[in-house]
Image (cartoon, rainbow, N blue to C red; front, side, top):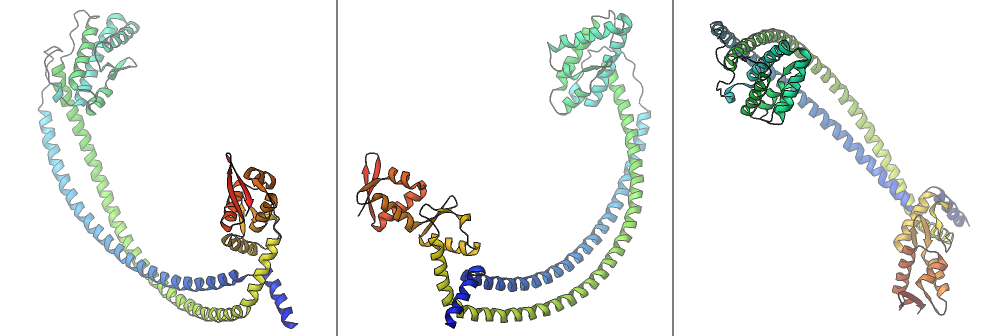
Length: 426
């Protein structure tokens, strides 16, 4: 009597708390936690060693960078001295350049391919805007603008590149000309032909007008551009010198700060390492004690598991039979089975693997009950597939699978019936 009461108590306890699979999983989980703790200790040790190595490598890297910066500073000083001498010679040569009188016409032969695009842009803008200014004096501002728009539209129909000359706020802008030449979207020769065509069209409205000499302007504007560029370069050099002096001072300051930071960081890191080592030793001792305690608990659980195994198997079979009995022939939704989730999952896994249960669209079917239902419909005669499906209402996936199993088990045989199939008992 006492043994039967113990069995009943064990059955109730297992139904509400655990199964054989749960005890096995508890054992695996404890073993995994112990392995994880050991790996964590070893990982922390490796990480701290790597941090020390990385810090030493960073300190060496900073020292090398400081040496490299000192070498670059010496090289920059030499380059600045050379650039100053070059600028002084260039300014002396620029002061000797003489202004050239405009003595030739716009159509003088020039190899525009050899002219820098920035110089061409300046000359195009200067000559065209000079012609536009004369046109305003001759016909008035409004008429002049109308004529320029008409000229550009007329030239656009005869040659390409006109769209690069923008008429804006009463002036011609040729910035797009410079951009197009630099990007090689159009050749300088084609641009120049377009420019000449525009000048010639404007001349038709200005009797006796002689455009500014293009070749002379190229030389004059080239000299002006060179002088402006030289001045801009000298200003940039002066700015570079000031910035370099500022950077040099900042570098010296940062170098001192870095040294102090490294020293402080090293000291703090050593203190942290000492604290961490003490903490690790304490934690490790605590973990070892915990592992010993867990090992003792595991041994107790193994002993209990060995004693309960026969009873648990009996309980498991009874529980699975009880769950299977609760499944009607037409199937039931998984969430309508009022059993603990762990027990239900174990039952379904076992039933699916053994072929006693099929789950379709979250509806659970008992295979033996499905077979009995099909055999009842077939009776002593036969029944077509469509008849069986209509009367049972089973999903196609379920019905096809169970019929195949019944054929393999020799419960029914299948015969073709027109386009369909018929089944009868064997």
